[in-house]
Length: 427
Image (cartoon, rainbow, N blue to C red):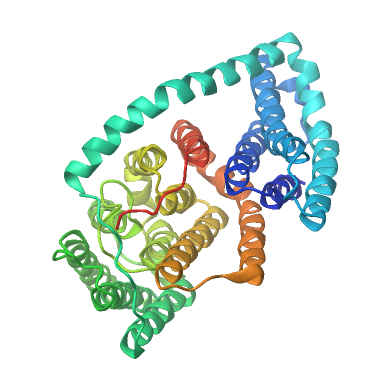
């Protein structure tokens, strides 16, 4: 039910006639997924809503109402738009009716228990959103100014794809696939390193390296040191992921190795302050596979040690992305919430969202190369957004289990970024 309702709201959003309305409507499924994930964690299996505190049910009901109202409201406004064609309009309206019906079934019991407090909570959330809307542009202007001091704005290069560039792209994509499917740690580490090196070579081939890269090579050194330590200390233990659960890794060793891999992954993910660092087209996907498949399961004790600090990274990055209008960083920050959790399902959802960020970068590169998606490509991209939205409830559930506050603040930052104006990310 949660994933279906989120998908319906996303379907409303992608059917809208203008890009601005589509972006803003997608805040609805995001907030809905946060509310439903929180509700699932708060309720014990088989327990009734009456066991929950009134304040919690009121706030959750208010969040659900706002989440449903956003895409449905944009759909109502779009009825006056003559460019909203019959096919998309039919999809949007049918999805809106179904979403309202299913959404009220989830919301009304909570609102009934919350009573008047639900209305007060809804008003408070709207007031907070209005305040952020008023103050946000002023804070964003200051953050963009500070951001440009560190990462000067550059006009992306015009891409000329020759045979060598296509070969490097194929090698990078193959490395990402191997990183996601490899049954062994050594193959995963080799795939991550290969994907990043070929990605840097691809950026150089396309003329995107306006200065020598610094952060990514340093991160590759950290990855190499951690790889040597992991394989050397494992000794005679086979390097399969299940076998390494019994590897002779001490607590101190795990804390040190997780720190090395965490710092390296921070750069590979491209989160603030590394959003402009050259790192290749699929670096976030490679980092996601490294974190969710290697670091978290194998080095669990060290992972838990650093987890509260690491969760601050996507939180800051989400608000940085909202201020500087970087869609790719927004997606990666959202996916990182799942990558940093202890849930295997949330980790795989994070890997998939990191893959969506790679797809977003690929679309931008194709546009710079003069290619156009066409109607079929546009439909496929919109359907990908709906499929990605269904990953949000399990991703946010795993993230909330790990860090409730950081997860909520990150989601609010991502929602805020959807209300900004999209620009080409300076890279």
